[in-house]
Structure formats: C-alpha cells, structure tokens
Length: 336
Length: 252
Image (cartoon, rainbow over all chains, first blue to last red; front, side, top):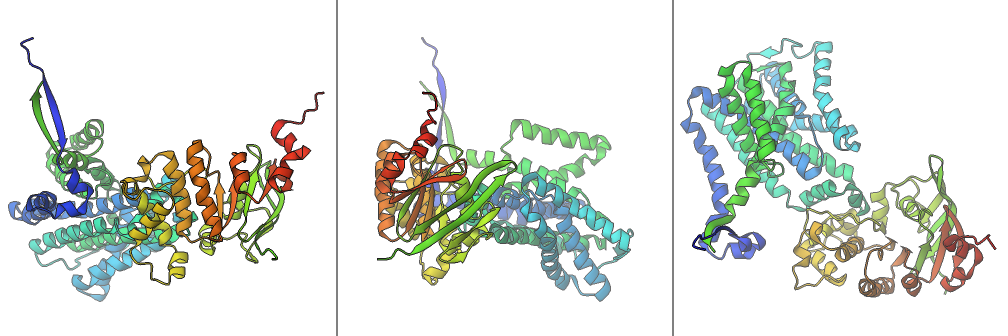
C-alpha cells in the first residue's frame, strides 16, 4: 500500500462574504475580493480601446451595440420572464427616430440620441403592450414578427427613404468618442440593471417570472409591471439603435435585421443566462470572433456555429456562471 | 348582535366546455366567522375560489363583497379590496429569499394606502410577519430561497403572503393538505388568531376533524352544487352528505 491516493478538495472561499453584507466590510481583503471582478470589468472595458487598431476599434463599437441588446434580452428573459425577440425593433425604432430627427431637422446627435432613446422606447413599449398578455413562446413569436412588420410599413408607405434609407447623417466626432460613448452606456446600463433587480420593483419583476398568478393574488397588476420592464429594456435597445445610426451615418431597413434579435441570444448562451454581465462578455467575444472568421468566407458561419454548439454541449451554464463559481472556490490536492 | 354579511355569493355558475364545474351556488360569509367548504374531489371547491377571486370569469351569478358586486374584476383589483386567497398548489417565488416573497404584497396599492406611506423598512416588516406566522427568527429560514424550503414552511409562506396584504377575508385553499399532524396542530392557533383579529376565513379542507375545530359553519358541495349548509356536526349527519362522501349505498 505504498501508493498514495490523492483527492481534490474544494472549499468555498467566501461563504461569509456572500451570505452577509456585514462581513464584507470587516476587512480590506474581503472588500477587495468582492470589488475585484467589478473593477476588473470596468477597467478592462475602459482600457480595451487603447489596445486596438482602427479596424478593431470599429468592431468594438458594433460589439457594444450587441452587448446592450444582449443585456436587455437577458434582463427581460431571466428577470421578468418575457422572451423578447424584438431586439431588431428596439434598434430600428431608436435608429429611425434619431436618424430622421437628424436628417430632417438637422439636430445634432447630442440631442437626437437621448430623444431617440426615450422616443424609441415609448414606441416599442406601445407596440408590445397588446402582446403582454401572451406568455412564453407566443410572446417570443409576436415580438419576432414586429420588426418585419415595421419593415413592410416603411416600404409600403415609402417613408424615411423607403428601401434606400437616408444617408449622410451626422456622425460622432471621432472614433474615441464613439467607443467611449458605447462603453459608458454599457457600464451604466449593466450596473443600473444589477441594482434594479434587487430593488422592490426588481423583486416584483422576478416574482412575476417565478409565478405570475401569485403576483396577481398579491394585489399587483402584472401588466403594469411588465410594461415598466419592457420600457426599461427598450430604453437600452433604443439607445443602441440611435447610436448605431450615428455610427454608420446612415439609416435603412437593415436596422430591422434579424441579427439584432438573434445574436444577443447566442451571446447570452455563451456568457451565461441570468448573470447580466455574461451576455455583455459574450457579445464582446462573439462579434469580434465573427469578424476574425471573415477570412474563411462561407465557412465562417459553420465555425461560428461550432463554437456555439461547443458551448451548449460542454459549458451550458455559460462563461460567467463558470467563472463566478471558480472564483469563489479554492481547490487543492490532498494526500489521503 | 346582528351578523354583518361581508361576502354574498348568489347563483354562481361556471361551465368548462361540457363540464358544469359550479352550478347555482349561493352562500353568505358573515364578518369574523370561519366557514368551511367541503366536498369530494372534483366537486368544484377550488373553482369556487377561482371564481370569487377573479382568476376565472363566472358564467352567471353575483359576488357581493361588502355590498359591492366584484364579478368580472381583475384578480389584483379584488386582492386590493381585501379579499385574498392562498393557492392549493403552493406558488412561492422560488428564486427569492423567503422574506423577499412578502415584498410583493407589501408593494401593493392596498398596503400603500392602508399604511399611509409609513410602512418603514419593508424587509423588517416582512421578517416580522414571517415570525408571527411561525418562522423562527434566529434561524436562517427567512433568508433561505423559497425554492429550498420544506412544504410546511411553504404553506405558511402562502398564508403570510395573504396576511401581508392586511386582508378582511382570506380564502384558504387546503392549507392543511400534505402537512403532518403536528404541523397542522401548530397551524390551527394561527388561524384562530387571525379570526380573533376580525379576519373572516373561508377554508376549503379535506381534513374534516381539524376543520370542524375551527369552522363555525360548513357548506358541502358535490358536482358543483351546494348540497348542504349548517353547523358541522349536524351537516355530517345528513343523508345526502353521507352519500356524497361514502356512496349512495343503493345495494341492500
């Protein structure tokens, strides 16, 4: 019996830190331990543009748009229980509002982006209100149809440049402003939503997801709260849309492209559903990856799918859930 | 003292396709009493609760709550009037901590209105209610996620969610089912205490012995129809009630 057996032992590093807020401020080490991932993320996002060349900086801006959409999808799906495939509608409404204001009234992007964020969100919410009675897959289907519906309205009426779109919109001053606007928006939206889901209103959203009938029995109108949730999600999406039209300096029917509805889901699967930060990381990996694979021509989509299938098979919990668990665990080999 | 009616059900009917779930049921709840609704499985008891609380729309009849017809109201409107229910199959918010489950009713318009905006710290109000309903304060139980709680606590949580709304009438849909004798024994004083506070309780129950300790009156339902009403002991002696529970005994 000379052979020694080894066994992997695993500890949870900071049960105390996670269980009880009071312990967390008891030492600098614990505080650092809690703050580190957040600081790393914020600093990482802020430093990222400095390390990239012009082309990839541009890609980062696009990735940021998808990151915002993925965040809004994750919020609605995992915290409110609405699987909303209307990302393209948020982008379209936001993008068209700001583009049209810029082209017809010549307002500067500083004015049009905030107006379009609000206006696009109001329009998206109004359009989605009749669908809020639907649940699960039915809501998903209807919200998926709405962007296509908008495309047909625009082409049929021949408004806003119809199929041609409107070009020569004002763009943001330079690539640095472009990048930091979207990065700032991501950070604000992420930490805003993270806070929101633990406030009373966020708890009600989560309760609606867990059991909507019980929420009604508790005297709360689920439709009213779903409207609020959709409005918050569409604020994020419409901002991304408004930003996109000024990033390209052009608006057209491709703002309603299906990519905006579908890719955020892939980003959520990769990053980890329900983590909020995961989808953002997922989008920032997936979009540049799709660019990097451009050299493979048609094979690009195949490789892209392989990566996704790999994630679904081997890490179905997503990157962020995996990393979070590992971060909270020690592992060491012990001789028994 | 003349008893004051708080909930009057008249001619309430509901059919699901060809199945007559509830047919022409009428009875009255008086303020402060405990009324039991009993009947065999599938008699339409839960449908009755669903009809009264607006989760299912009645085909015919009227429901007067404090003299006001609430038929056709949305469930949350009815809950805000002070007519609340528990669910037979418990519906906790699994992902939230037990005490956070109560944040939902504590944010309802009814609680906001009755507390006059001076509710204070909602979390501590929630913990207080849970303690009152039998969650140990020192234990970690209120802080655990509701999805991880055992059945006994979930039943209490259902009731706690009702109490948080400061109700006038509670419709309890089988709060004792699935509980052990000792758990039921500890639930009974809770219901008695609620009654002492002036809350009217309508209980749907299969555990007759425990129900009869609490109920002032019982209503017996079979195949959607009311077949008897009265003092528990007397009602159970009636032939039609025996027949509903035990069979008709035609073979002689």
